[in-house]
Image (tube, rainbow, N blue to C red; front, side, top):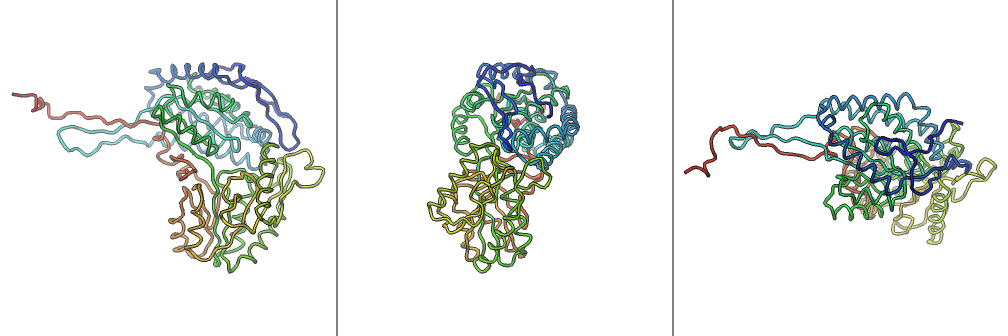
Length: 492
C-alpha cells in the first residue's frame, strides 16, 4: 500500500489540521476507504485568504521578472515528473480511474507547467500605435488572489490547468478540490512547497462547496474564480460573482454530438467514438454522448459499434488491459443507472450494457457496463441531460441541414466530433456547430497550446493557449507624454 497524505491541509503555506466536516476518500474498485480527515472550514478558508493576501502583495514576489517566476513553474514540473508513479497510483485510488489513464493525466500536468513557464519567457507587453504626443503602452498585471475550483474526474490535469497560468501571472492561488477526490491536490501541495514558492501563495482547501466554494466566490479579496464542474453550480457561482463584478472562467457540462457520414472510414470512426464516450468510464465533460449516424449506413454501423462495445475490457483500474474502470463513487453509478431507467421508460431500447457487470471481480466495486441506447428522438431526456457515465445514445440523420439542426438543438455547446473523408464538408459542419472544440476524424485529443472552453450552458471563457496567462491578469494602459510642453488647454 502506498503512503497516503497525512490528512493535514495546506492553509496559506502551513500544514494544519482542518476544522471542517469529515471527508472520506474511497477506492471505488472495491469500496474500501483510503482515508478520512477533516476538510476545511470557513475559518480555515479565511485564514488562507489572509495569508495569501499578504504573500501576494509582497514586493519580493511582485518584483520578480517573468523569467524568475518561470523558475518556480519549472521546479514544480520537475517535482511532478519525479513523482509520476506516486501521483498516478494515488489518483487511481482516489478516483477509480485506470492506472494507464492517471499516468497520462500526470504527464500532461508536467507539460502544462512547462508550457506556461515557457510562455513567461516570450510574453511581451505591447507598445500601441501613437495617435498624439504620448508614448502609449499596454501592460498586464496580476489580479491578486485567484480561486481555482476543480472537479473530481481528472484532478491533477484540472489543477495544473488553473494553477500554472495563475501563478505564472503573479497571483496567489487558493485551490478547492472536489471532496470525492482531494488526495492528489494535497500531494501536489507538497511538490509546490518543495519548489520554494513563497509561503502563502498556494493553498489547498478541500471542503463543502456550500461553505468553502461560496466563501471563495463571495469574499471581497478574491479577484477571480476559475471553476470546472456542473452547469447549475456554475450558474449560481456566476450570479454571486456578478454581484461583486468579479471575472470568472466557467468550464461546465456537455452533451456533445458526434456525427458519422456515410463516406466515413467506419473503423476509424468506431474507434474514435468508443474512446470519446467510454474512456474515463464516460466521466468526462466532453464525452461524445450523442451519436448521429447518416441513415443510409445507420443499421450496419450501429451493429458494428455495438459488437465492438461488447468487446471492451471492463476491469480493475490496476490491470493494464482495462479500458473501462469503475466509476468514482457508488452514488455516481446510481445516478447513471437512474438516467438509463428513465430513458427506457421514455421508450429507449438498450442495445448493450444498461446494467452492472456480473462476476466476483465486480461485486464490490462501482462498475457499470458501457451502454448504448437507441429508439428515442433528440428531444428525449437522455439526449438532453448530462449523464456523466458510460452511456451513448444513437440517432439517425438525413443530410447536413438535418444533423446541424439536431446537433445544435441542445442547451450545451462544449465539443463535437465529425467523421467524414470529405474535408470541405467537415469544415462546413464544424463551423456550423455551436461548440468550443470540434474534432474531425478523431476525438478527445488535447494540446495545452490550444484554447479550450464551451458555449451556451457549457460555460464562458477559455483556458490554455497563448492567452492562458492573460486570463489571470488585468490589462493596464500607460501614457507617457513626449512633447515636454504644458497642455494647451491650461495655457493663456
